[in-house]
Each structure stands twice: as structure tokens, then as C-alpha cells.
Image (cartoon, rainbow, N blue to C red; front, side, top):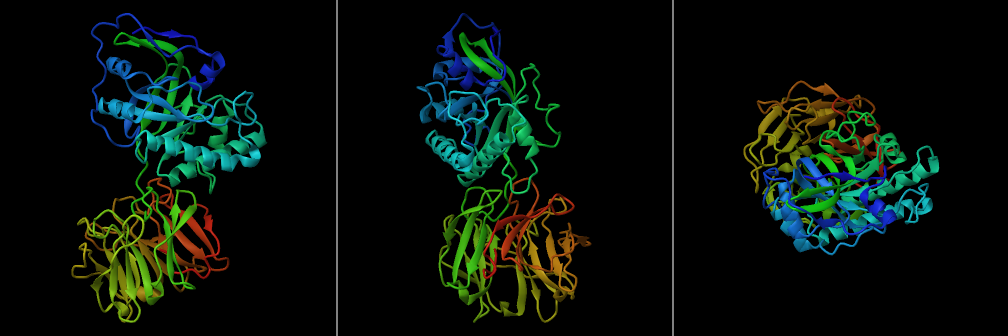
Length: 536
């Protein structure tokens, strides 16, 4: 291997190439070091990029030829950065085609796609910059374009597209606000398309300080992955400039060496060197009607009898879809997860006039022909999904028998239910809201949330290894003013379940994130829901 460095600090390859107007990135060189063998290939990979990957990667301005990529299988690198678009992209991409991506993935390469759009308004550059008055619109437009280009290249959903934000000065409040607004829009819009968002910045840039300061802000769509530059040659993803818990675990990559040449397999390429330690975000678990990987919110409009779904993106709601009319004949409607294990998000609904329980299979874009899965359900209340409670691979249901106050488990069988089992004795009529399915205790089992009618307190009832309920855990007071408490799976995909509810005094839908022991400050997800019920 031969190394040469001539890097002006603080600029990633796209910007350096635009400023320096250098020649082609790939050079034919002399023989590589004899006896050098690269890491083992992960041949035939067809999943998201970079997916689960820990190791070295390189980025170069122009995607190398297939012959060069084959030669570089002798290198220690197994991931490659590809510049897929943006009005700031500096180099032509004659090799970057869908066939090229397929060929390199089959050879064992992973990709970290890079997008170079408008830069910070306070950065001195001849390239396009963010307009503070249009930052949100520009962020959405960049994400729309990036998602379209990723799809054209065959990069599947849940691949990550990294936004290349070059170094800009810290301390300019208006500039920081514009970048944060842009980044929020970039992230949430990529989520709408089913892709993860990444953000590249230098540790000395205002970009890092701005992302760190906004990290835990309620309602802010932070990037899912952070790609930071510190050219110290150290192959790690920890850094003194980053709080230890931010973008962890498996959500970081570091550009540890800038512009230099390396030769492998007889081919020299001018590259930046990176260390990646990444994995896909935790799955939403359930509640994804639209199929973009993020839990959604459903509701009925009693004025029309129509059922709607708003697509979720981890931060807010967008893109309302109708699931049809005629739902006013139902007095209980709940999401059932993937009840029949066919892949869609399904619904269960009780018909008011008959007490029949109907199953509506999800198709990914709506629901299909219903199937009757039970009768006599008029004597039950607080019908709620509880996930795979008995761990047999099917989604289950729980409900309180009004006449006795007993909480019953109805084990799902895909097309109906097995024999019911009592989860708790009499006394459940003291609770007027139940919701279940999420793991609030962190033991890998679904739990039940219950609101006590007389006090407005919320309690977690853990699912036990014996299939019964464990000792309850207090989950806070002040819930008496809320209705339609519904678990949405892991709405923000941080590994913990989340909750939504309608605030009766305002009609707002509020989202509550669970931190493992308490609720974080709520975020308003929508307004005008005062008459909309139920939520699901």
C-alpha cells in the first residue's frame, strides 16, 4: 500500500474537488504490496446500506470502475462512499449506475450514500446555500431528490443517505437555526420515503455543535446517524466533542483521514478513510400501516364514518390515507399487528349491532375483505392488542369482561383465537383505559398500560414469564384529562415503546416517549382530534 496526503483541513472530498478542480480520482499505479489480503467478503448482500457494518470504508469523488473495485478487494476497506446527488456534487459519475451498485454489492461491498446539497447560509462558498426563509422546503426537496436517486440505484428502504454539510462557523444563531430546520426537514422527509438520514460534519464546525445542541429537543428530527471528521488517524467512533450517549450505539462513523492516495491491487485511488460502526435502528415493532418502517396513527372521523391513517416518520405525522367508509357501525376498532402473519398491519373491529368481532387483513395500502373471528364480544370492553403475549408467534388480544371485571387474554391463531386465559382477577373495572404490546420494562416481553379511573394514574403491568401479569409499576399521574391512550410501537425507533393520547381540553394528539422509567415531555403530533375517535 502507498499513502500520500495533501489535504486542506475541514473539507470533505466533494467540496475539495470543487475548489481544487483536480483530475480524475482513479490512477493506474505500480504493483501493490505483495501478499496483502483484504477482509472476508459478505458476498451477495441485498439488504439496506450500509446496514450492520463495523469496519473501514473509503469515499472518493467519482465512483471507481468495476475493475478498480475488484482490485481494491485486496484492501482493508469493505464500504465505499458514493455521491448520489445534490446541487453541490462536484464530480461526474459515469460509473454510478444501478448495475454498478448491484455488481459491487454482490462482490461484498457496502455503501454509504452521500448527498451534497445547499450549505449553511453563513458558509463562504460559491455553491448554493440554504435560504433561512425556505430552509424547511429546501430540506424536504433535497430528501425527495435523494430518495428518488437512491431508489434509481436500487438502494432499498432503510438504507442511510448522509447529508454532506461542510464546515461553517459556530456562534451565528440565525445560521444555526436555518441548518437545524433544514436538517429536521431532511430527516423527517427521508423517513417518509422509508430511508434513514445521516449527517456529515467536521468536529470543529458549527454543524456538530448545532446537531448536539438540538439532539434531545422535543419535536426535532435529529439525523439517525452522525458522520464526523477528525483527521487524527485514529480508527474509532468515540470523540471528546460528542456526548457519550448521543448517536449510540451503532449510529456513528468517523472520517479519520482526509485526502490521500492509496494503492491496492495495482490501482491507486485518491480517498478519504472512514471507520464505521453502524446498524439499522430498532424496528417500530407494530403500527406501520404505510410500510415505510415507521409506526403510524389511525383514527375514525365519526362525521363521515371514514377511517384514516396518518403516516408516521418518527417525529410527526404526514400523508393521510383513507381506509374506507362504513366504520360507524363499529364501536371498537384496534390495530392487530401482523395478526395473520401475511406481512401487513391488520385491524380488528367489533360490530355494535351484533357483537361480532371482525378481522380486516392489511394490504400495505389499506385493508381487504373482512373475516368474522368471534361473536359475543358485546360483553367485553377495553379491547386491546397486547402483542405476542404468549410468545407463540401470533398477535394476541386482551379485554375486560364488563360483568365480572376480569381481564382475559385471547391468544391469536392467525384466523381466530384459542381458548381464553384469565390474566387478572376481578377489579379491572376500576380502569377505564388499557393499551398494550410494548415492552416498557426492558425484559423482552410485552406489557399492559392501565389508567385508574378514580385517580387518573397510569400503571405498567409487566408481562411475566408465566404468561400472567407481574406487580404493577407506577407510570405517573395527571392522565385523567386524556382519552384514547394508544401504544404506537416504537414511534421514534429508539428501542423503547411510545404512547399517544388525545388531550380532551384542546383536541391535540400528544406523543409521549418512554425513557425506561418515566415519560419525557410530550410532543404535539396533531390538532383537531377532539371529535375523532377512536385512535388506533
